[in-house]
Length: 499
Figure (cartoon, rainbow, N blue to C red):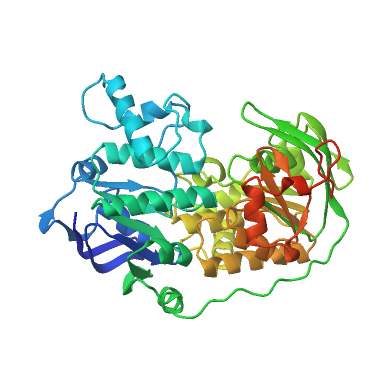
């Protein structure tokens, strides 16, 4: 299906999210939509899929002007969108999510739906059990489920908003293979991203947005430096690695074991020093999430001890960890980190310890303005958090962290951020390190792990590697370990890891 967007304009208060955008996308192509955080990419795609309405402009489908009234109506017109955070129902089974939204009465034919599900999953080599529950799936598997559901509902234009955020390298490879197959079948793929390497690898054409304006288009093969200049009006480069200045131990793990119904994390022994950064690498669901949450007091280890500073906090709740200088930032922004419906100012108030019975509104609005400026958040003190772009929600989460902290635990701290924002945020985090904060973070970006970590732990099916010197390893070595190769080279006592 050929898609044309003509004179699309959208404002949210004083923010001009889309400014008179004109774009033509041919059928059978993978069209990239590139831009920094807050450039208007997601807004434009939500207008096309009718999650929001444009203030003005029109949508042309196969040369016919089309008025779309709702997301369900968009699907009837053949347009479906895969959002950054999958729109599914975690407590329900995979097959029930697959059927959800399909027209056909109150009692759908589950047997026929299962047959269609198996057929589609086999076509794209997706290993999904229709009887499993969605909350047991990884982010990549939830994406696969949503793709199958949209295709089953007849989608011919598939929009993917930052689809490689939070998935593993192997899941990304499978996703890209699927998208190329769909494009070869004549479907129109719109790939929204801020990641230049993803756009370069998968897209036929790319349109670049900056502050709501379409500033340029290009056709593959792309000149990356040119795309960077279009996005930021300047060339961006990574800073050199900064040497770590170690302080005293801030975290000691002794024979730590965590276990749930899916995975048992083997015994880990680790000492982490002030100012040090440890990156956690591995396929999603390999145990690094449980490890990080055990270090934060969010889950109780089944064995071993967690010592923060000189205090044994094993089995204590997160609030006790927090009072002892531990901060935690989750990957799920609107599910765990932020509260939809509340403004930025209200979030900053809630993040601080209450003092007195009354809130000084004027003081906190001033504080909100300072934090918004400090973390380069595109919003106002009164902006509801759900109105912010994904990248700006991530900056807001970082702005909520208390100071000072002795230990900072981060799930995907730069998830959904463009390269300029990544450099900026890590500058902020490294500043905390210089003040004595130790950091442990999870990332699916191996380049990020090697760039900003002092040591790296690799996770594979509940096993944990010995700490690796980040300056002496490379992406290939990490990739081998993540895939389960090279573990015989590690000699450990009773399967435990010693730092």
